[in-house]
Length: 384
Image (cartoon, rainbow, N blue to C red; front, side, top):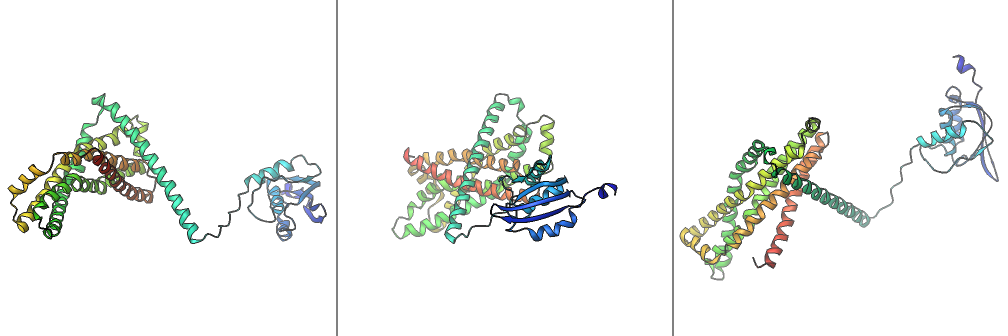
């Protein structure tokens, strides 16, 4: 109370001249004295006070609170609006310039008014942002892929460091447990391809070539692509959810504290398990698809299973089988890396986990389709 009574009342005068506005200060401008002037300063602020010089020749004591209301007045009364333009000070004072710089440094910039975009401008802007984000995601995926491959190479040189139990567990849960749904779906895909081929080729009197159509489609594309898409939807999402939950519960941070590397303990076993299981799942998917084709050609065209298999052996080169099998581990590697990357980049909230799971599935399927197209062009060029 004594400190408040020892303060000299603050006062101001705002004048304009040919040289510009001048805010003349007098008395003490501290937290104890500026309360009565706050409303008057706001009323005087605006265009009249914007960029005004400050006359401090009659100014007494000043603190940060006083410097704030003075700086706000010079900014025209706006609570925001940081600017690098120095304040003009008339006279001398031991601390006013330093306190004004502190107050101005704490001011937040005013939000920019949105530009009046047209529909085309918004479309172009969103497309540009999307391309930039896609490029950043691609670079992150490539970087994580390189880190994963380097870790796998280091562990293969020291096999005793591999977590075999974790790898076999993932092989069972993400590999063998996916076998029923992959086989059933491939069987029905074979039925659809054989039925459409029989109906279309019958118009040209070439129903017998339905066998070759089914074999080419299942061996080269549908067997491996259906397997990869199901792994993307089933396994990539599971990897992201598992690692993301561990990240949210800070289990991964605890592992690092204990000296356990998440790449070695969590990522490598999952990646190796899926890469090893993908060729087996693809092979069984191919067999199931051919069984679906046999079922339709036998029932609709009267082509016996023996004739079906013999025509495949005579007319379909073995390279078509290898095309599908070569693509299987590559697709599995990309799917596993994408799922693990998004799991490790999950935030600390459930919403982030949900977004990462969705993104991992979408990106995995996208990478599979793009890689399949690139493989198709490459195999055509080499004559396969």
